[in-house]
Image 1 (spheres, rainbow, N blue to C red):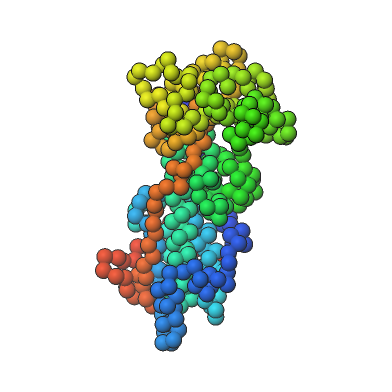
Image 2 (tube, one colour):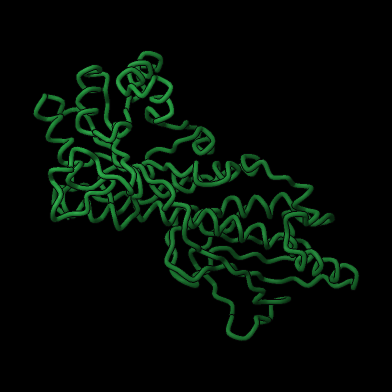
Length: 366
């Protein structure tokens, strides 16, 4: 890292936990066990039928170095969806905060209270933590790889629409500077960002300049106009064409060449590098062409198959990218959580190989 590079900022750690109402939980169905693994629901039924109401300490962890997200969501599930007859004050809940870094096996959430009150919720709070931690960790990896370049979170099209709100939050706390849908940005009161899409270019007869002009004409002045320039597989010429047509109104061009194609601009350059997709040579050709014609202010956004290793390779080579759009790689990977009863009525009760791991970093949730 050069001495002039600004320090990498920590993940965003909001001072207040998210309001449980923001999660729009289907409370009655969650309380009934509709979304829960059946054995947890039946465990509750057995305890209630047998008149047993032990107070347990449940400890939640996962086994990788990770950036945690989903703690507020897990707390909301516990707060809103307890079994009938129980209230929040029956529990003592301690949790880390979204954006915290954790080590393998470190306790992320600890719940003490009558087991029958929350036995049916294990599937739900573990799933929330697993999903959001995976998104936050993968996003943080690309944020760190690209720093100080910006990362835009663009995986919405690669997953079910219902996951957008929480995934967008997880990416936000991990340091992504933008998300692509309003739903992804809703939990912190922002909105999505985006570029001129391929479909709009098609709608203008394959004319990237016409589509970009129309986009600029009908967007507010504070919307950055970024044009996709790979439609004709001639990213250099298309970049120059939109720059000439829009002048100062053009914020940037986005290179998105498929990994199965070779842009025409690099045909004569091939020989000692992989010419497919968005590669370092193509980016340099676009940057050089724009600079030669006086468009040095036009930013270059790269997308299409980027993950942390690819970004690190581009940065190590000094490729003139201004920001990266990252999609499907951010919704891959597993950070599975486990919940263990480790104490019953204050006495050790964990299965073999597990034990109570108090974590002084946990915060009591009021």
